[in-house]
Image 1 (cartoon, rainbow over the protein chains, first blue to last red):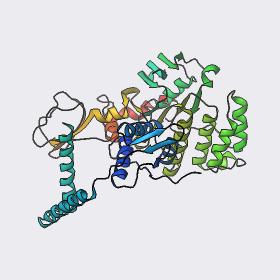
Image 2 (cartoon, helix red, strand yellow):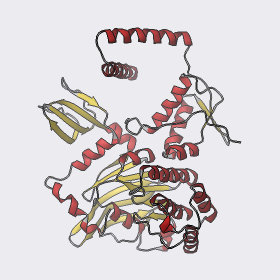
Image 3 (cartoon, rainbow over the protein chains, first blue to last red):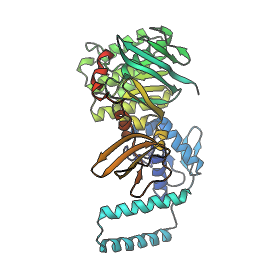
Image 4 (cartoon, rainbow over the protein chains, first blue to last red):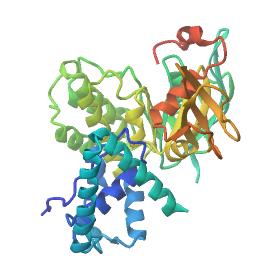
Length: 134
Length: 301
């Protein structure tokens, strides 16, 4: 019997982000949000490939990457399974969200539109990522 | 890793015109490698040379380490060649095309071919000429895959198909490649379609290879720089294209600039922007000649 897959991958063909990274990020995001939990099975390489018309090597690579991050484990003959979760302590996440909402209100009050806010957030995200890489 | 397909200094001249010139690249075994270029860049010429139905004027082409000989049956056995003209017999029923394939090929997986076609809801009794273009392409691809080739040569497999049919054809292709581990070499006009299916990309323009590499390295090695008109920040980078609009200058460069002056933005280009920059970078004065480069190619490409 075939189980309904716990995650449906998508591909943003215009983002410039390598496809394997997009798959890895989608699994990490689902783990963070609690949509994927330990014990869940990821779709087989063949299923992903047939669903989104993507290179099988890309899916292999994404799955290897997730495994080396310790998030999944491959069980020979049965598939790839989630090993650990990424969801943060809820209180901490709520506090962060409140701070962000407060910041949003201040930005709106200062007359910034959604586009300007998105640009600021993207820029802050980018510079914090760069700091993280150094 | 061994090369499934390798060319060294490969060239083909038709009378006085070079359809392909000094072409050197390799397609690693087990990879999916795409080639992109405008009409008349020499893509179809390259496929015909690799399939052994045309002889090179200069250089060599090898498939799994063996030099390709004209119409060699040993060579053809390992190949699936999907011609852009899709030579299907429109008066044949789908099942008759399968019978023909079975009779003409020593290795043939008829059960798999029937299974693929039924998964796609293509009726076996239907005449090929009465199928939609998308279905015809699926039948042609099935014929190529049913002989279980080691190397699949697909010349513009999705050209002339609507977006849904394109997606479905690539789904079938990727599914069978995942099962069989076939090496694939394919051409397309659609960079956005090649990107998710390919490991490597070759950019061909005006009969020559402009650049080749993994898609990941192509993305990592190029930057899009936007800044004020004036001196350009070109230390340690190679300029691929430069556009000026009003007071702004847009550069696509290969290499990572060490530092940028004030007012410059450093962005990640997408694959399409990289490809367009290379295609636009023709030899000076060659711009108007692009269209007639193809006339000696012996057909559309």
